[in-house]
Amino acid sequence: MYPCEIAEAVLQEFLAAATVLPEQFGPQGTRALNGERALMWAVFVDGIQCYRRNAHPTSTQQRMNLAEAERWVWGTDWDWPFSFVNLCEVFGFDPARVRQALERWRERRSPLRRQRFRQGALRAA
Image (tube, rainbow, N blue to C red; front, side, top):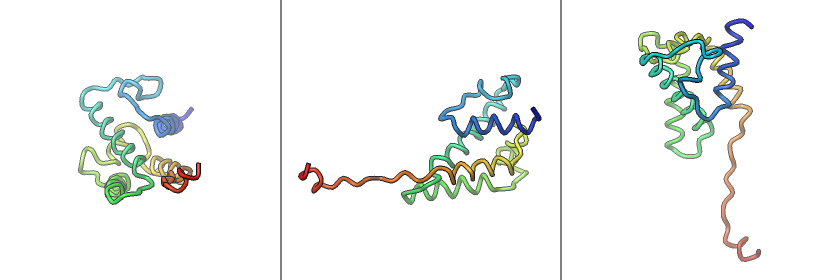
């Protein structure tokens, strides 16, 4: 398996998971995380989770959160150590492939439809 395939597999697993702990990161757990890398991983995870949580916004706050997450994910700021592209570089991910995976995930997931409670329906039952 090529390194990019391993990274993509790890990322796909990450996108499917609800929670990822620093101990779970890395192909076959080969990379130990020191304090700085653990912080970087936490920022990376938080950014991805923020994107996922707000991918189909239903409120103004969710739209604002999604806009912030999208600016981070699609940004190309190489100067800030916690930018998306720098974190992808640190963890061996191709930023373009991560972005593609996020887009595919968002397209596959339809927004949850809320069903409104109607009192008329309760009386009819």
